[in-house]
Length: 461
Image (cartoon, rainbow, N blue to C red; front, side):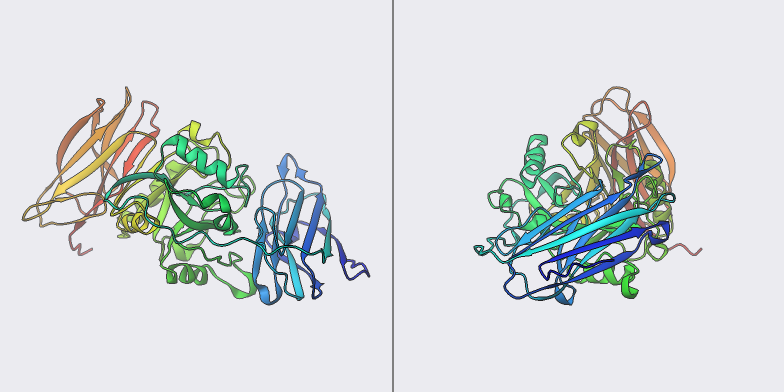
């Protein structure tokens, strides 16, 4: 590593091999008092080995390790531009405090073969800049105060990480799809929550969050504007520390695409945290993108969730388009339809926490059972039960031709019916733990899935 003598320009060069895979490589530099803008240009080669791309992200930290921005995504060039008055996507504008700053190379994937050679240049300037107008755009008032079933997307990306959409384009896409809410969950970033394009949005509920994109699995933190240190293994940090911090904020921690292909095709995507199988997770994303997505393996994620339910974990399931571009909604991803007391981030997350949530690419599907003494239990509810059978009713609507509805009890298909456009069926079942309903098309792809009704029966196993 070489540093230029000029105190306002730093040049770092180096070599990386597969031994540097999944590391956090700090490149420190000094920012003198009076600096108003910082520019970083990073390039490396080769980009590909056997048609698979090496993946290196950049993190920027102020003195004392304060987060200032993250540049994720593919390609072998990344640029950081941040100043007192403005900043590029993925960076926070504002004063540049003097002291030792750090650019960190986050080596998500370094493939065996030819070593990587990189060059990183830091340029500092002190031109006058107006103060930054940036401010966090949360909390936000409720879009609607009345209770209802609201449809939306809990997993989305913009140019503030590796998406191709601006914040405005993401909002426009959600409006065209007729969604009621979206979650802004860029990789290891919260700068999207400061974007001024959010100011005039009063027709969509916006859920703040970020996707903790670690080397060993991804998790959505929903319901908070706080940035969380995603660097598991750095200075002794463990996933339990991140989980504790997320949940201390009242936010939900949701494991994303738990059975994804993983390295090297989807680096870090597969969930590998043994203590969180499911541990203290608040929910699990079992439907990522279209059901037959290239790397997500949603059918396997579904079976993982069913196994966790059979082990006694009453854990809600979620869906997310994981959209990085404009065409994802055309592929038929799953959305969340949440029963909430109001259309707001808090109302939606409260409904999700209770399991009052349907996953669907379009059709509607409900499951319910009678409660002793009157009333009806639905998704997420608990049915006190004795030793007899429980009548479980499934309702559906908007089913396409050739669809089938299945009642799944404790992981086994108990009953199935050909689905007319609308229908209702009831089956009496000896439920030990839980029951859900599925709707699948003629090819077996999931069209809709309920969260469980749980049976409150003591099992002396």
